[in-house]
Length: 180
Figure (tube, helix red, strand yellow):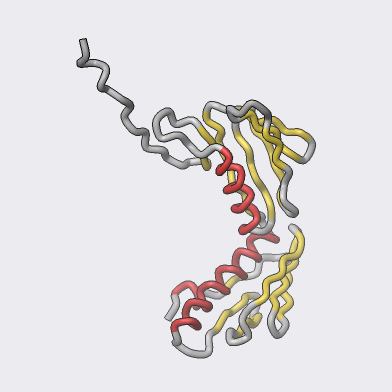
């Protein structure tokens, strides 16, 4: 049995769930999120929590069991607390520009990033960006797109990295020492 799929999803105060034949709608103070699901799976609300059940132990049902339980749990967390990804710019700068951010990341021009729908940027200092939103997938995608512009360098460590990400630096060249 799936350990993740069997866990009930506890609904915090102020969060409501509507379950139809093939869609789950979660509403809370952060907004409203929708997710369609496979009709083989059973999603039901019982006693202030949500349960996801599968019809059999077939491989695809076991895979969907944990998947849909995680998706619905992320929706509940998103509308109640929200999600945040933090990016550190090492060796580069960032500025807030209205709803967008302006990155100076070593190119001949500044790079302006507009937020996706449901995402907000918050700039801390001149080298840290907080990406906030209710949908975990969109917040993660926005952070990945920004990081992809200038990933961390393996030799100097410069670049855009996630908060807490460790970069193992490579040793540089050492061939010029012995030549005389």
